[in-house]
Image 1: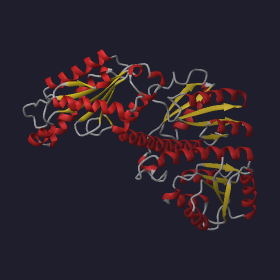
Image 2: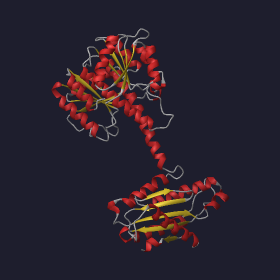
Image 3: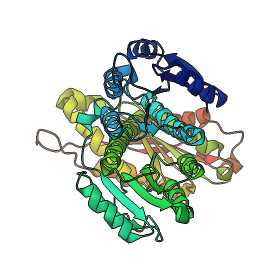
Image 4: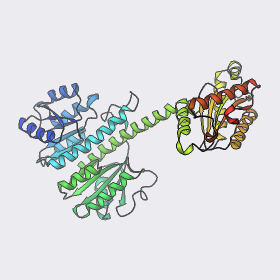
Length: 463
């Protein structure tokens, strides 16, 4: 894994030693000896991670992290603080300020690299989500404190229930999050209920490390829990075990739970990060949905419908199966807008869309592809069934009383439908999207010419 890491340390020897370790792991490294230089360097070229060591001449570590988080471009950059052993006050202050991890000297290279890899994976995932959301997305974790700080769901997983209960009791004194206990020897998904926990705290040690790894693998593989964060709490862990758990997908790890306050802070930070990621993921999904859904009717739009039909035409397993394509157009719709107003016209379109969609199968596709024009695709549909469907839809719209937004007398509209019935085995030449649509359009024009309020079939349908 490559990335640009900024080392910030007042002691040149510390910077050199750490740079050697990082460059040997194929990271690009830049350096700064004080907070001011680090902020200038990071602002000019935002790094993928910042590692800050001994107290700086112009800021303590917590103060420096505060300055980083106050800058929009650096608000979500992972920060690792390297502190002296036993500096519990410094660890707490760094985590409160927004450090992603706190590591004590002496540094175990294997563990440090695993922590760096884990944080970079999370950071790059976050960056990918931010790139796929709208420009006004959140800047990072700095403003998440006020926007996303809500009570989270934390599940403690342990083979020894007594240990889990003891940890829950200690955490409940300094954490406002909802805490539950899950047994490690039972399926995870069977114990989580309707909503997956935000964080799973997996308690493990050298004696049952296989159980911890199995639980992590199960959580990451399940669609219900794959987005949950994982905090591994490991007693008497060897560096290899810590590195393995991080590389398997743990978001954070603690090897000493004597300081419950630090564990609570780490869990708070993970809750906030997950809420930020969940928010971005929802924004991205909403954006994808908006890109293929017509906002007025709730039907699919042309951007979705044409690729859907193209895929149906080209799918090898569909080549011998008949399907139908309909282009439906409301008759004299301009009169509706001119006489009743555009609000009533919109109400007509919405209700017609609802009626059409409600009388199709789940496998069928309907889209609004123009002002009052709809495209309907019926996969794997014999000709007789398609003809019956088209006739039924035409009659359905003709007989419907369309309610108007002002509560006045309901109006009535009719629809014309052009249909192409396709069976590739009987088609005279290779099918194409343009050919199928052109045939359906030709049939629609014929329906309009015949006086509207009717169904007409293309020449291809007679083949």
